[in-house]
Image (cartoon, rainbow, N blue to C red; front, side, top):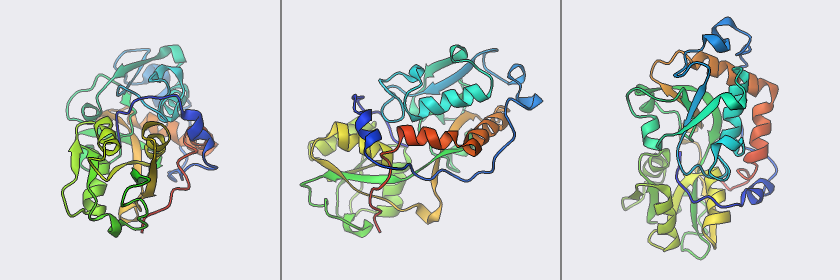
Length: 287
């Protein structure tokens, strides 16, 4: 995942930029979440009875959210969250959002949310501290540089080995830099993503690595004269996936998986992707 960007009103640019969304995962369809007794609304193990509490970070930026307001249902993750809530039987007025820092969302310990949605990639290490739902989005990591930068024309990962790369701490973007690009110098690690973006803008680094939808946002809205150099291939052939985050051992996960399964099999999840993440297609893959 990737984080904290200044929110600007450019989502329309992103939505209009491409024809199709990235492939979703192929998890098998599940029975109706609301149609099974264990997943009946009144039976769900919630933090607050009658209310579905959802966490995410602040700012909540494009294209995952819109106008830094998770409650408006706009942006891919806000739309997914409300679609899941509906499958579980919750009206919009019965959904409560709370701010949860990215790192805190998957840290060990009790949680104040029923689930968190915040571009958190499912990983074996994180799964030791929290429980993940099935994946709701397959994500690629992308390299962003300046159009006049010396690495702007790179077509392969090897061509980036001498680049000074900026990336946010604690993210799978950092893992991708370390494991796939393996730059000759240590990447510059920033506490938040906006600092990495500013470092590129000020030419303190040659490139930054973020997830692909965010890369489109960075180039369209945050750094004039920047470009997506390319997306990194899936490490080991296994796609990276975002999952909903739950407290370790939460019994709610089965119902969330059922809800996601319904959204996937009905095509609604793909429609949400098409609506909000259409720009995340077509970027060249670095070989």
